Length: 219
Image (tube, rainbow, N blue to C red; front, side, top):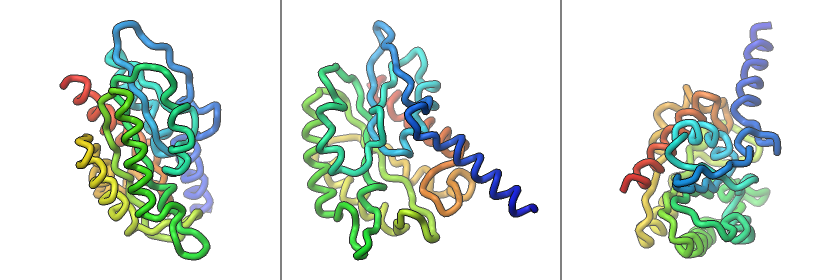
């Protein structure tokens, strides 16, 4: 009975922190407030989880938009980036790709091999820079130990983050190191054997993201 209660609590925590449906509060249309800077969040389900907190933290300081879907991997980003950016003016863009790229495939490879990931990121950064927005790269968050579905390896995020670091340093782009921020607190903020975060974790990440954006807005 106790195990059932614990499992039910875990499922409930996942559902609350990980509503990725079209009805998710993260996808609520944002009406720009006159005079406030416009910010765009690009990322996968981790970013969906922290979007609402970012909006709360920066209420009255910026209009926080996000892409209206899961950004998935860099290959998907290259296909859709023009549509996500649209013709609007963006003041700050906070972006990440990684957890989908490093999924382990049936043959033991990666969904997007690290060399291709680095090349894709360089192309995406070049496109983002054309907007004239101030750019912030978010380091990919940790993968926990244990068998997951889809499979991922805990050793991969540091490798992919190192590749991303090379691109960002070459392009002069600031990094929001969510990997280092989250790592010491995984037992508290991340779901068991799952790359996603509980409500506490999504709020924690959201505050980290809001602080990084606020810093750029005040430069």
